[in-house]
Image 1: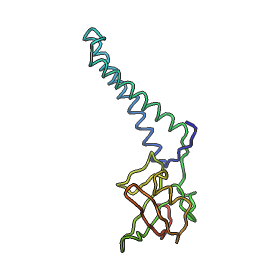
Image 2: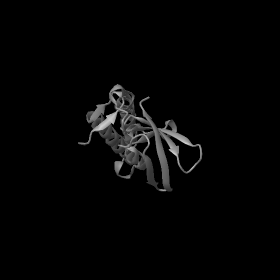
Image 3: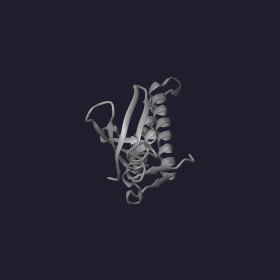
Image 4: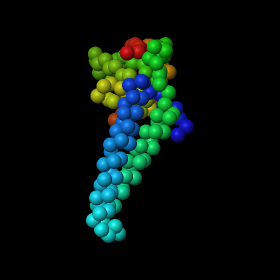
Length: 159
């Protein structure tokens, strides 16, 4: 994986903790399942063994993915983020131009940290891609699967 991944310190720590959990606990549990299934005899017709091996394969792929993300991560310092334009880690206050008095605040983060319930959207999402590089006062038209969104940028800040 050659692409840089930009994370907050919290996001980096969450990925690191998830990796630790998978390698220290989940891997052991999966190996125990394989050993248990192996003890049941003939492996050629042992669905439990096949399922445990499949689970191991998925687990190892997840571990590898997390290791790659952590290895290519750049931890961003919110104090060094500019607010002249929309960048990763900036929060954006938007006026919905299609709905009276609707104000929305999004924080742009990496895909690994996106959480719509917390107002954190990925810079790779249609909304995130459309907002990056814009300034206060800009009006943005965004194509999304449900149609089009129309926003005006009211403020750019760092939380």
